[in-house]
Image 1 (cartoon, one colour):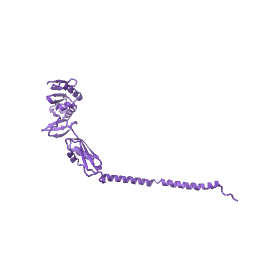
Image 2: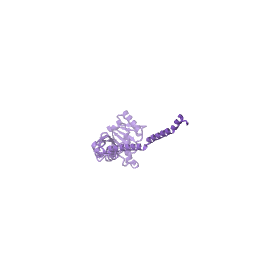
Image 3: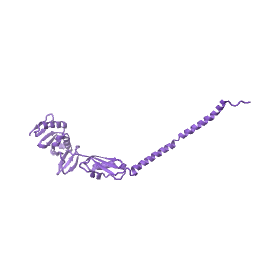
Image 4: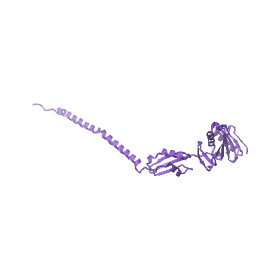
Length: 267
C-alpha cells in the first residue's frame, strides 16, 4: 500500500500555486497604481479649467474693470487736465489697460511732467502718480517767463513769474564763451550755480547773470552782488559766501571766484 503524501509534500505542492496567486495579485495591484495617464489627464484638465476661469474673471467678467481714476502729485496742473489727456478706458478690463501708452501720452502733452507712473489699483481703479518739474530759474522773453528746472530743461512758459525763483540773464551775446560752449552749456552752468546755493542765499537771489563761462554774477536783495566766477568749486564757494555775508553784513559786493582768497567791499 502506497504511502500518502507527507505534510511537507502537501505544503510544498501548494507553494507554487500560492506563489503564483500572490504574484498575480501584486501585479494587478501594481497595474492599478501605474495608471498615470488618467491622473495626468485629470490634472491637466483642472489646470485648464483654472486658467480658463482666471482668464474669464480678468477679461470677461465685471469683477475687475476700470471704474475710477485717481490723480496725485499735481501742483500747477489739475487732476482734471491730467485725466482728460490720460483717457483711461472706463469699463475696460483692468488687466488690459496699456499703462505705458498712457504714460507716454501724458509726458508728450505736458512737458511740465517730470515723471508719471500709471498703476493698477485692484479691483477697479487706475492711479496716475505725477511728479511735476519745479523751476529753479526763469528766462524772461516777450513779457513772459520760461521756467527752467534743475536739469536745465525749459519746460513751460507762464505769464506771471513764480515767487522766489531767480531770473536768469544770459548776457553773453558778444562773449567768446557763447561760440565755444553754446547757450545750452551756459544755461547749464547757471543752473549748476543756482543749485549749489545754500537755501537762505537762494531765497535772497533775484538774478543770476551769465556773461561768459567763467563769469557768473548773482544779484541779491538789498542791491548786493556776488561775483561767482565759473561754476567750478561750487560747494566751497557757497560755504565761503555764507561766511562772508555773516562776517561783513554791510558789504555790498562779494567776490568768491577764488574761494581761497575771497573778498567783500562797499556798503
